[in-house]
Image 1 (cartoon, rainbow, N blue to C red):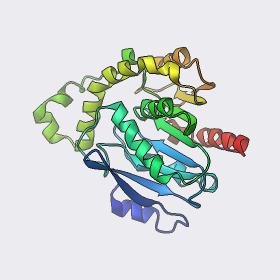
Image 2: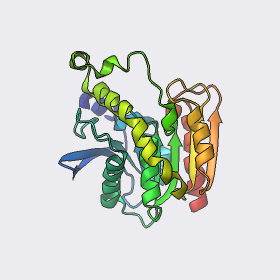
Image 3: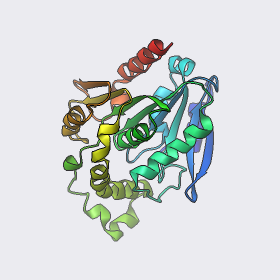
Image 4: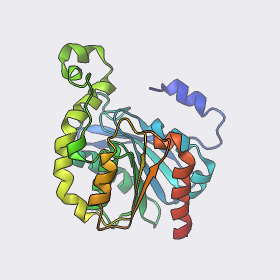
Length: 261
C-alpha cells in the first residue's frame, strides 16, 4: 500500500497531478483519481484486481502521451483504498454500477468511454460494457479471471477465511479473500451474458501468469464471439501485464485512439 505522503512525494515535481474525487454510492463512497490535462478529452477508466488500489495503474496514468490523448481515471474499487476500505462488495453487478456512476459524472467528452480492467477488474468492466454498449467504445481485459471453472486457490486460501487469521491480516487481504470465494458464483452468473458483449474487446494475458489460470484466455476465445475481438498472449510475461509490458498496452490504446481521430 502507498500512503498519502508517499503519493504526494511521487507527484511533488509532476507537471500534471491527479485530483482525488469521490461519489456517494450504496451507503458508502466510491473514490477515484483523475489525471486530466483537458476535462473534455475522451475518458479512459482503469479498474484494478484483488487486492489493489487506484495507484496500481500509476505508471500509465503518469504517461505524458496518454495524458495528451485521454482524461484518465483510476478507481479504488468498492472495499479497497478509500472506497469503504475493508467492507467487501462481492457483487460484480454492484462493482460495475459504481463505475457507471463515475462515468455519469465525469464524462465531459462527446465520445464514448474506453475501459481497462485487470484480473478481477476485467469481468467488472466487461459487465459494464455488456449493459451499456451505447456508452462504451473499447474494452481491454488484462490478465482476466473470468472462467468459473478455473478459479485458482492456494494452500493459504482456506485459512484466510478463519476469523483468528483474519484478525492478523490487513483488511485489503481479507476483502480479496472474500472476493475469491465469491468469484466462482459471480462468474457463473455472468456466463449467459457473454453473448451480449458487442463492444470491440482486446484480451491480453501473459504466458507465464501464475495467478490467473491460462484457461481464462481460452475461455475468452471461446465465449467472445459476438464482438470484434483481439486476443494476445505475451511471452515472458506474468500476471502484471500493465507493469511488465506497459509499452504494448500503451501502443494498443494509442492505436485505437488514432483510428478514432
